[in-house]
Length: 41
Image (cartoon, rainbow, N blue to C red; front, side, top):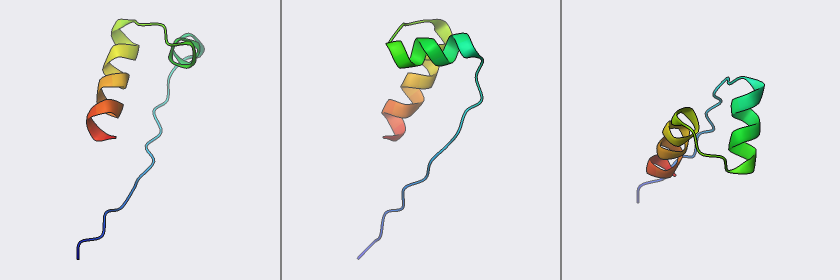
């Protein structure tokens, strides 16, 4: 049986991007970060 591991990745962003991510506001940067999370999650 194969065991799957979960890893937490931290991405350093500025305050504006952080607020946009928390509030679901789309931008070029937040879209890229969201795509990575969706593809790997």
